[in-house]
Image (cartoon, rainbow, N blue to C red; front, top):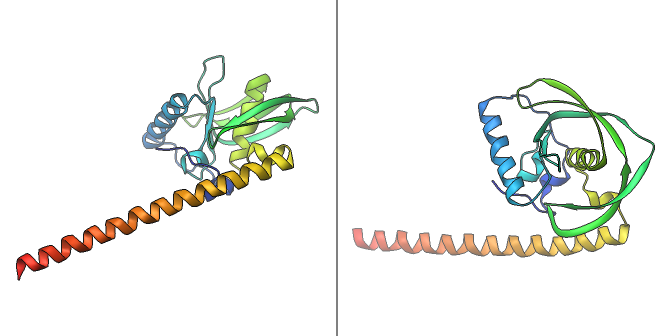
Length: 189
């Protein structure tokens, strides 16, 4: 399991509902949680692990792991507040984003049980940030346009370099496979 990076298509897609909450799904949630903790994150959404389904995990300063499956934001406060945000899919970049101070959300937990959560502070911000991922929205879409353009250009170049390296590795693997096949054919004749 790995974290997807800005430029990967899955981050801009609207995620589909989770249909099955079974042991395999829960095991994937455990692996996702470990990845989030290992990368010092406080939240991680399905699209960020290349899974285009509607779910995310959050653990803020209270130390409680929260799983949100097929979440729906029911209410947001009119009061807003600015706060610097970052994202594991846009590593090393931070921007002040204005969001509603409070949020009310309904979702299923990892056992398929419905719950409603009223949140404020960092938990409300994390819920909104991760829920945005499920609609293909990134925090840079809610901030300063110049910052957004700069980040997109930077990560597009990174994605191009990554694709070029991947293509070079694949070409090298094909050349090696062809040499092995030729050597086998020569040995058999």
